[in-house]
Structures are given as C-alpha cells and as structure tokens.
Amino acid sequence: MAVIKLQTFIEAPVVNCFYLSRSIDLHVKSMHSHSEKAVTGITKGLICLNDTVTWKARHFCIPFKMTVKIIEMNAPGYFVDAMTIGPFKYMRHYHAFWPQRNGTLMEDEFVFRSPFGYLGNMVDRWLLKPYLTKLLQRRNSYIKQAAEEVINSQSFAFTCGR
Image (cartoon, one colour):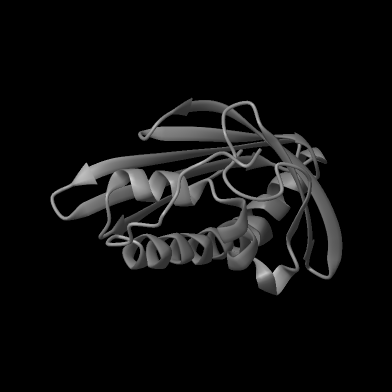
C-alpha cells in the first residue's frame, strides 16, 4: 500500500479547520482544475458521519467516479473517509486536527492501493503517490487560506449538508 503523510500548520482554531475540511463546496473549489464535482449523496455543505458523496472528476485526461463515506468522526479532533466504490482497490483518508499555541496542526494520512497487483504497486509508487501528494497539498492550502480568512468572521456557520 502507498501512504502519503502531510502536516499543515494553520493559524486558526481547530474547530474552523475541522469543519472546513469537511466542506463539499471548498473541496470542489480546490479541485476546480480537474472539474471535480459532487454528483450524488451530500453535494453541498458539510459531510457528516455516515454520509456519502460521489465525486466525478478528470485526472490524466480520464474521467473518474468515486464514492466515499465518512466512517469515523470525533469532532473536532479527527474524521476518516474511505472509498466504497471507485478506481482504487483500497483508499482511506485520516484527517486529524491538533491544537497548537497559535493555531492548528492539520495532519493527513492518505492510504491507497491500486488494483492489478505488482503493476498497480508500480503505478502507485511512481505515478499516483507524487500526483496525489500534490492534489492533497493544494487542497490543504485552500483549507489553510479559508480557515485563516474566517478566523474573525461571526457569520461562519457549521451545519451538515442535508
């Protein structure tokens, strides 16, 4: 299995980072260059425990669909999403939020495996891991920017996408 681990420091409270990380709208904005859209399940607002979303996107000029479900959550400390239908043999993304002196340390652990055995392992190591690392870093920079912008906002609402 391939594993991507990232840490992002954000000058904002843990709760803001936790909720923004679950925002379907922010995710779509961060992946605009891949025409990523939420097409079924929770398609707007915040995704919550046991909710699913099906994403439609284009990567490597190939259209993809993937359904993920929030399988664990302990607000505002962490949540886990896992692929239920899609291109990977296995995919699990752990998101953790640690209070720091002047903000939050956001940690990602993205674990995945492509199908096709040895060939899939090679694709994971040499193609997908670098590509997905860049996607996650871009997404994290959007979360960081949004969290730091709303730190003083009184109108920031936290509700699930139902």
